[in-house]
Image (cartoon, rainbow, N blue to C red; front, side):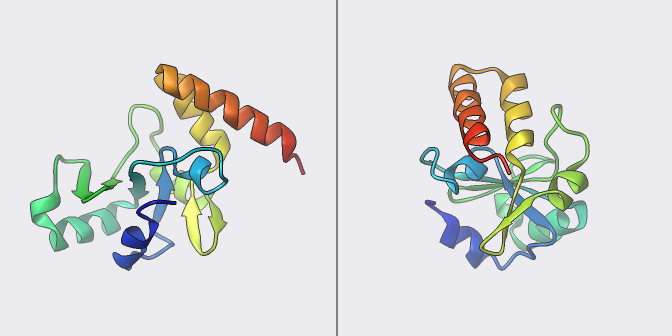
Length: 129
């Protein structure tokens, strides 16, 4: 996964952050990435904003290079805490569950998102436990 080393170099607590966007697909080999989107618990986001004030792009997003860290994922999900708590842990890093990525991509509805939904459905069908 491109930019994972940069993400890990921020030394963020795995308890407070989870990779979202296409990241959960990328780590499973379903596609490539051009950046990393992550979500953060409120307190952790504020600490990161204090550490990198020049990188705060809005009241919900911090951008550091190719990394975007969000304090929420509105309007699609209102509970970042639940997304982080329920995330899959792969090699010590939290990734939002594919089912939640699928819900977001279905709701967002861009052409690339609908293609990703097909990939996710195929992956989930092939990897039922």
